Image 1 (cartoon, helix red, strand yellow):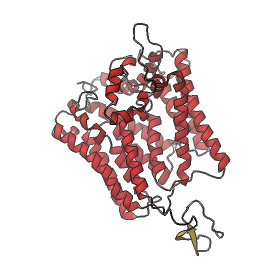
Image 2 (image 1 turned 180 degrees about the vertical axis):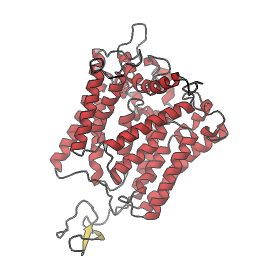
Image 3 (image 1 turned 135 degrees about the horizontal axis):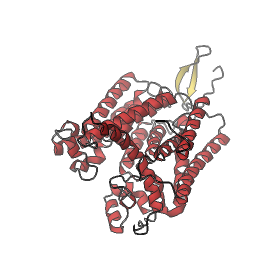
Length: 460
């Protein structure tokens, strides 16, 4: 079956934008995980897939929805551009290196042992799941019984067992030689990362959580080992699709169909499409609902802090008391059971039409600021935040990252481990000598100041 561009003009346009962005990145050797490039790639490819209209629910966008989607994209990219402009003006020579390095003051032994607090947090959730299900969910007789995203009793421990990506991130940054010079810590961290990924999948095979576990390592490798190019990214996407189909089978989302039945191939193709396209048809439905469907309740910006209020055990109560949408977005569900929607809907619910422009601008600014700060950071904190924000951009079609309590927990752990491990001697003068390095020009020793970026060795 041939693909007719005249029959799918919107899809062709967005696929072309994604292709041009990839060519641009390849020719100019741009980092695929830079916030503006990643945003354009994700939105253009996913929007192009959605507009193929493989299901009747995906209808043409109304003008209002085009303005909302386009306005959000424009605002995000504007925030990114302003930060890049500011950094270019203040430090035009600053270039993101192929491999990030870290200041000599950082104590990797502290980092390694403090990371076990995050591991213990995750393992508490694993033990909680075992106490309810009698085993790791994937090893029970009927895994689909425990995988219901709304009613399963094992979700009482969700804050804990969904924190496996946090564990992988903390031990992951200690796994690369360019960051961590201590071999035994690197080797032990790699073993813990692999064990955590396997245990996370066996405990609760959530697509988002387990893909983040593996994805975090790929993002870290991109900055600490070798840049990921578009060919590697294509292989990763193929792996993601295979993983998606496999988990859907475990959850029983294909029913009892025989693999020899031709219908199963159609379902295998349609299920990933549903999960992508429902975000976009729900967005259009939310802004153009029929008159008999009640409008949502305004949150006046309060629900934007749901990640924090949920940890305070008042978030769910606030939503119920004021009639706000829960994280399952009941008010915009066009097709039963398919209830995800891009983050722009949350921005609108919380702040009205100004939020559609202000929220993307704010996050574009913050994401790019951290991205630009990574080369001069003296702890892994900026890299850990950037790695998490990378998946916010990717997953913004499915969940609003800043409203998830688990991310708040992760950031607390990241900050705690990195700040305690940073051994900067505040009372020493700025030019205090802390180490000696060999100058490659003449193999002589030259004293290097504690600030790694200020290398004023004349012979070097």
